[in-house]
Amino acid sequence: MRIIIIGGLSAGPSAAAKARRENESAEILLFEKTADISYATCGIPYALSGVIPSRDKLLVTDVEKLRKRFNIKVHLEEEVLDIDPEARTITTQLATYGYDKLIFTTGARAFVPNIQNLNVADNWATCRNLADFDKISARALVPEVNHITIMGAGLIGIEVAENLRHLGKSVTIIEGGPNILPMWEPKFAGFAANVLKDKGVEIITNTFVKKVNTHKDKITSIELGPEQYIETDFLIMSVGIKPNTEILKSKGAHTLPNGALQVNAYMETSLEGIYAAGDNAGIANLITKEADYMPLGTHSNKGGRAAGFNAGTGKHVVQLNGGYKTAIIKVFDHTLARTGLGPKDLLAAKIPFKRNLTVAGATPEYYPNQKDMIIETYYHAENHQLLGAELFGEFGVDKRVDVLSTAIYAGLKIEDLPQLDLAYAPPYAPAKDPVVVNGFVATNHLLGNYKEMSVEDLRELLLKNSDLQIVDLRTDAERMHDGIPTSLHIPLDELRERMHDLDPARPTVVYCQKGMRGYIGSRILKHHGFDHLYNLAGGMLVWNMFTREHLVPSLTNELAV
Ligand SMILES: Cc1cc2nc3c(=O)[nH]c(=O)nc-3n(C[C@H](O)[C@H](O)[C@H](O)COP(=O)(O)OP(=O)(O)OC[C@H]3O[C@@H](n4cnc5c(N)ncnc54)[C@H](O)[C@@H]3O)c2cc1C
Image 1 (spheres, rainbow, N blue to C red):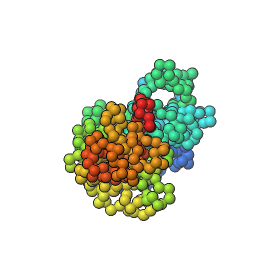
Image 2: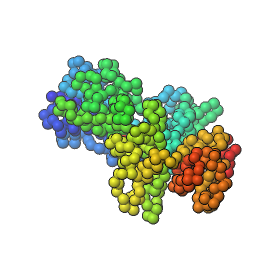
Image 3: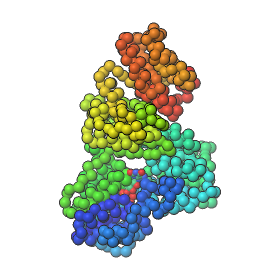
């Protein structure tokens, strides 16, 4: 039996090695159009800054190892130009080869928008492969280049921005959408934007670049709009990707609207004997049960492994059931993570949901250098099943996002979170883990006697000048620094004596710094007849972080404290 694999980066070598482990006698051929094989694309941003000390460290395996250890014949710099699914052959610039099973792992390419003058310029690159890495290293990381523009604020754009700042470059990110990191909801994306700005990264949103200005073959400035431009020395383009599926699409393979191949859980395409995995294939969203596109390294590795097993054995055994967009990114000294469905996805899928935001210590208060973690969970409004979560903090975010991802996979309800037996020792976690705290707060809501208001909703109400009574329950010292517009200051410990200052008939929002004292205050007020009562989720801390990006200027002026 001959197995042919097309594409030699992530999914391809994974499939080839698995096929060999399952089938010692098959002939396995792997075709890669470039001169490079099996390297860690995900490390490229960090190799640019030297955090990964050299290019060599990105190389995961080599042709010789694949030959010796796995008996795989690698055809480098041999591009597959055509496939005949009927005859079961592939054709390259050198020859035509027959196959019994084909594993199509051609990945995706960087999308380059139509921008005037880009075709005559040479001081720009995409950031997708080693050739891009080499160009950026040679042309952008030299002392003469001071300012670098990054177009596109997805995961790659942000990682590259951070690493270029580490090298001392001035960096501007231009994003077409209203906020960076569109996988996250705007509030959490805003938290990351705050950090980037504090570290000197300029961020321009809602801007689609249509033209660059050039001198000879050099981009000298980027046009943002009429009479508006920024001068730059180099441009890095990371505005999205396009699956490399044209060959199979032209043979009738079924695809998703973005061109990614439709595969089943065994990674079979709609064409007999042809498997696909990685960035060129869609996988199921395990929550919506719809076909989805999640071009991430974790899925390409697992999908390649499944395809390799099934093609190698001829059996339908190993599955990649799907995913739900768990992702994490380092933003300087902070971490932003997500899993499952966010509010945008839930609204689109018409799934009724509730949100629950908490701020809790990632380690105990008594342990040095304690850091807060913000977690917002999204759960089904009727059956309470956990559907998604977003997280932001400086310590331990990676662990909590994986706990919540596992909880989603297990179909847990929000009330299950406090029952999880999570590890506790001072250097790692507090006795009440942030995930457990989030479950406690949601359970309080579900008891029906305690309500919270999100910062988004409070902002909307303030903008509408609604008849809200806002009460700041923090100490005098805290109040000296800041406060929410129109709020009345009554420290929590004076609330019982000063309750007559408040009108129980008016809708009331209380807040403290992070949420806990607001909860206590709202319980006191509730027992004294306040019915339209809310605690501000995340308190002043989250309000400040949120309104830095999302407060409209008129609110700042009219309602200043
Ligand atoms: C800078 C960067 C950072 C990333 N960071 C992360 C991260 O932190 N976490 C994460 O989960 N994911 C990350 N990713 C995404 C991850 O790298 C991809 O999901 C993964 O590489 C996809 O693997 P793949 O094998 O499907 O496709 P690709 O990596 O695109 O490889 C496909 C290969 O097929 C070859 N090929 C294409 N067509 C042909 C043909 N006709 N003939 C022969 N060869 C062909 C290509 O040359 C290429 O080598 C990152 C990606 C980039 C670019």
